[in-house]
Image (cartoon, rainbow, N blue to C red; front, side, top):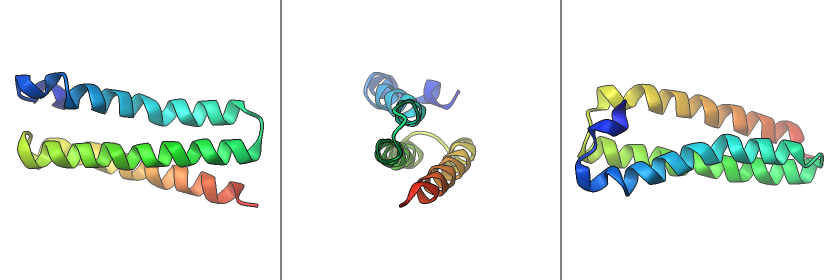
Length: 95
């Protein structure tokens, strides 16, 4: 896995932040969906969408400093698809 290649000094900082952020994306979508309120769901999708950009930034930092683009590229592509899906879902909920 890409995170295992981080230098030891980054294992607990950046690695932990990436994991928390990655968990935050689907967690916010699920929590918003469970609210049974379109406006709240929209709000939680916004939080999840923001987390995708936070994760994207963290991956860019890794790419610039620690791990090759070839190993990060698949994660970036997947993240872009997730961003598109969340954006489309948000658009479908607009009043």
